[in-house]
Length: 634
Ligand code: NFS
Ligand code: SF4
Image (cartoon, rainbow, N blue to C red):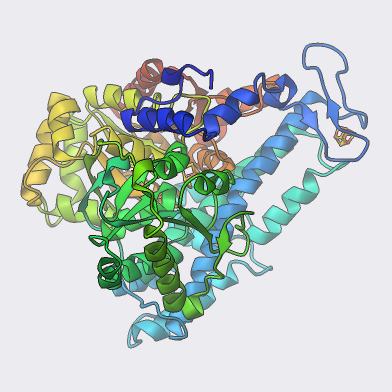
């Protein structure tokens, strides 16, 4: 445990738990990060290939060997590796969304204990796809919608209907001209695996165009599909107040922490935690305290107001408090180390998904068909574990901050309609034109142990707010800024520049929030990045311009997962200036690096920009916004 402690996190609660882990002799992600140093330079440059059994090959971008055994150059290897990673990210979102469509179908057939909660959204999405919505009850229409959505996964289409129905028309035309409109997601992902295998595509430009195509698969068969279907089944989020950080854990209650990504599990856990309060009391606890980590935490925060225990790098630390009785997980971003950390305390770790099993955890085969029984069983396992809690090992950090969530596009439009019912986007656009709101930024993505936890995210956000840039967030960035106190009305008073603050006050008062709107609006989990796309599409439509002309920028300051790469690729496809806090593994290829950070702008309007320093990154984002404002003549 030699890594300087302040190099691990800027969050006091995390630092306290890192000390406790050390005292309890529990290894954490930072110890393992240190054990990996120095990390392989070939890997970091992206020039290592093991796509066939002649390899592994390592190419030297500065000399010899300049090619792998088959002759693949650094450009080929880098582009191939990047494409596989982006396809990996897209596959997670497509699989997630497919599962959501299956759930929609089963809910429509009433064969599972889930309702269809947002009938208005059901009708809007079905209508958008050209389905006849009149004279059908919600279950009948949901069945038809599921069928239509499945058809996007079937062969034979020129491109996915859902993409054509939901992406801005100008963008669809741009993508068509570039030849990157995907046919169907399964075909495209299969083709990428084929294309990147030994002896197929060696052309870095062709590989990069197909990377851009994967960004579209990621959004329109993944993010947007997942969000819309989940809203239909669980309801579209509306503003809700909660709290964030490890201080939300309770000394007296059964603490159940939900971690992963898919709300079909977490929504049921929330329901059963509420229903089994009395059993927890009978076991001697004061009740059940639920909290969430990562994106499933965001899902239940947005819709149910469940508190946030933290983001990616806090997952082990939650258990280190000694107060977590049960952690239940499904898929993605779950460190396998949780089993070892849980074994040092009384914490029960429960896996629930076919493709998310962890040695050392207890597996409950959670199925929608018997979701109530499964969720009740898991909550009862938490209550039983509470009895094993060792008070001497419990230390809950005091930090927790007020945090607001629930800012779906529908919620934002509802709030703005209090200022102009006819034309809800007008007040926002007028304020952008007047310069009170200088522009907007979407900050999204993960933590990464390369950066002290939240150390790029928080200063970047503060700097942008100072410059009157309105911020929307998703994913682990939301937890970071919630913990830092930027996602509540007080955060507006403290951090927003004067122009922005006046607008936040006006909207907050009109919407009856009892104070200014938070300066950082929580739009959800990482699949909910589609909400940011929808908002931008609506603004561009209102102004009659392309999304790429808007005075906005995107950022993933502490990106980690392949999902962040696929989402970032889509953001660039959308025409956005996309800041990332570190280069992905591409620097071994000057061609790939130049295309991603320069040339691609001429094709789609967006590009990647790499900068680890948050203040410099904010300056570049503000400069980009200024350039876009000037081009629009505002
Ligand atoms: Ni997004 Fe969610 Fe967090 Fe990164 Fe992981 S939780 S889907 S990938 S680490 S933001
Ligand atoms: Fe080496 Fe080529 Fe095989 Fe890759 S595909 S491991 S570069 S021989």
